[in-house]
Length: 303
Image (cartoon, rainbow, N blue to C red):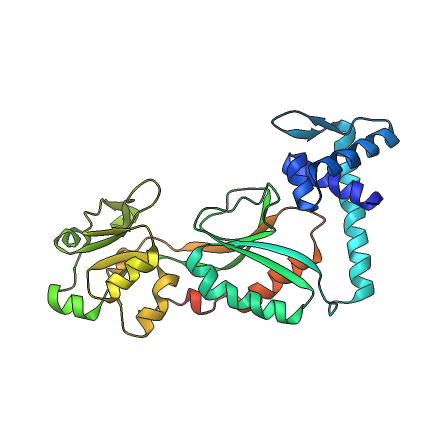
């Protein structure tokens, strides 16, 4: 490891608050990261990081060096990019997190195209509906649905999705189409089970009010695709996110109902840690994915 590694480690510790997380970002052992930090502090003759069992935070001297280190590292990256050009093949590993259905249907094909253009790059795509934590260094970039409240993350918008009510044409032919939210209780409802149980269904109401329905579902399952399959099979009405059923609606397998009662759309963003020294592979992938996905099929909302 060289002096740039020392600076990158220091910045990563400041960003993650953890020496172990910084070591994972740099793909080295915690012991190696500790030795590197100790060597830097010994050479400078000053304590840079206050370490405890819970958190590692920069000292005043450490904060001053982190500020300068960010600029030095970015200058080095900019100089390297200028020398190699934008067409240079990317190397290393890129760790990406995304929700299950969105990741498999929409993001995975984009990643495959990106890998075709960069044969020396590796991608580790983790699909989970649990919120990916980018602060511990386990992920480089993640796709998030909903408001991004973490000020330590940069959010690049892709589009928006919304919760929709859907059922099959065959089901509506048998049971009729509900004309308002109050009539939903007369129908067979299909619901998602989350870790905290079946969540309330929220609807828009006149004059900006909200209507909350506690669905008495006939079929509850903890997997969105199973709910969608049941809806397509005519088993009842499901409440899902629009990107999950846009293809089924366009193909005529499902129809939307009570569209005027749908809650406001939810933003979809690619997010990554707010770091001045951002690896080129992260920057290039985010730009590539935004060009491929923004306002694309995932964000169409058929009538």
